[in-house]
Image (cartoon, rainbow, N blue to C red; front, side, top):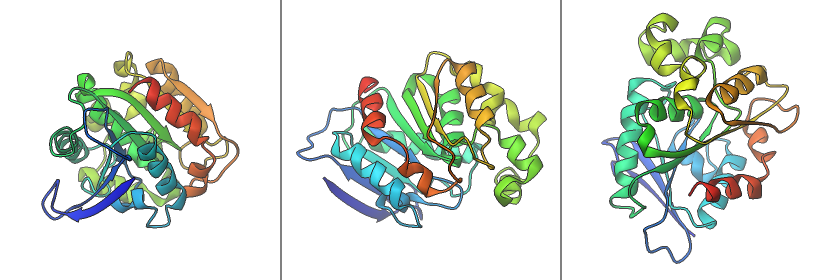
Length: 240
C-alpha cells in the first residue's frame, strides 16, 4: 500500500491524503473517508490523535480500495460546504485516482457521518454505502445540549444553526428515511455521551440500515479501535 499527502490537489489551500492498495491499476470501487469535528485529512494517516482511525483507513486500502481523505472545509457538520467538498472529492477519486465511475463508498467517524449522510441525501445515485463509527446522527441534539462542547462549532458551520431551517437537508435523524435504498452500517458506543446510542439506532431504523453496538466506550479514537476491522472491510466489499 502507498500513501500520499498533498495540499491543493483536490481543493485549493486544503490538504488531502491518498491511500492506494497494493498493485493498484484502477477500475475498482473507491472510498472517501470523512473526518471528525477537530480532525482533517491527515486523520487517515493516524495523525491528530487518530491512531485507530488511521489503522482502519489503512486496512480498508490494503483490502483493495483506493481511499481519499480531504480536509473538506474543516468543521462542517453536514453543511452545504461539506456536500460541495465531498462532490469535489468524488470527482477526484473517480478521475485522477482512477476509481470506478458511478458510486463510491463513504466511511465516516463522528461528525463525518453527518457529512457523509448529507452528501448521500443530495446525491443518492453516487453512493454505494455509508459506514460510520460513533456517528453524529442528530446535529440538533448535540447543538441544543452542547454535547462534547460542540455547540459553537455547529453554529459556526451554519452561521447560526436552526433545526427548522437546516434540519431537513443537513440533520441525519430528520432526513434518514430519504436514504432508504442506500446501504448503511453504523457502529455505535452504548456509553456515548456525545452521539447518543438511541440516535444511531433511530437513524439506522429509519433508513433500513444496521446499527451495531461496539461496547461501552467513550467518544474518541479508542472507539474506532473497537470496530472489528475484518467485519467492516467485509461489509464494504459486499457493497463494492
